[in-house]
Picture (tube, helix red, strand yellow):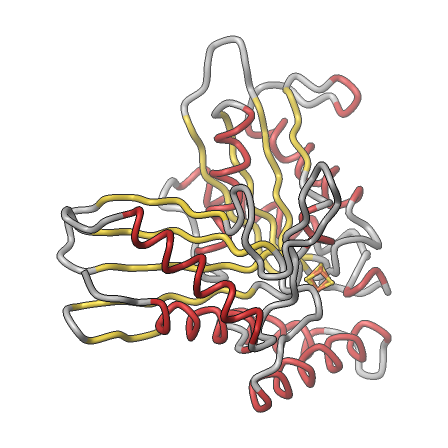
Length: 289
Ligand code: SF4
C-alpha cells in the first residue's frame, strides 16, 4: 500500500487555507443581498477579504483550525490501520508547518498534545465501498460552531414540537435563535431526524460534506430544507449577529431509523468557515477537489 502521508498533509493545507468555491459563492451572494453599507455587508466583505488572503498566502482562514473530521471511502484490500497511522502523522506534520493550530487537549489533564493527535483525534470514519479508488473527505469544524450543536427529544412541549416535520422545523429554528451571537454566523445547519443520540450527531455533521444548495433527494426533506433556510434568514440575526438578511447559508437534512420510543432531532451548526476538501487516489494519481 502506498504511503499517502504527504498527500494527507496537502489535504490538510488545502482544507485549512482554501475555502471551497460553493461556500465562497454563497458568501458572495449574501454580500450582494445585504443593504449596501450595512454592518452585515461590511462583515461579509471582511470575511471574503480574509478568505482571499488566506488562499493567496496559504495561511489558515481562521485561527481555530477546528476538529479534523475525515470520511475515508476505501476499496477492499486497503489497510485502515495504515491509513490511520498516515493521517495521524500528516496531522503532526501539518501542525509543524502551521497549517493547523495545536487543537487536541487531553480531557483529564488539560494538556495540549501539541500536534493535533490524541484519543479519537482526528476523527476518522472508514467506509468500505465498491469503487476501485480511494476517496478521502476532510472537514475542519471550529469549536465555536461546535458549541452551538443541540439535540432535541421530541415531543418537546416548550416549543409545541411534536414527532413530525413541523416539530423538526420548530426545534431547528429554536437552535438558530439559541446560536444567536455565537458560532460565527452565517452558518450552515446539518440536521438529523431520528437515529440514537450518537448517530444523530454523526448524521447531522455528515451533511456538511454536501455542497451548498444541494437539496435532499427526498422531496419532503428538500422542501423542509428550503423552508427552514428561508425562515431562519427572516430572523434578522445576520452575519456575526449584526442583523441583516443572512443568518444561515444553507440547511441540509437527512434521517436515520430510530427506535419507536425515541425521536431525536439533532442540529449541528457549521460556521461560515466551512472548510472541506476531497482527495481522490487512483493508482499513482492523486487529485484534489
Ligand atoms: S466558529 Fe468558525 S469562524 Fe468562528 S472562530 Fe471558530 S472556526 Fe473560526
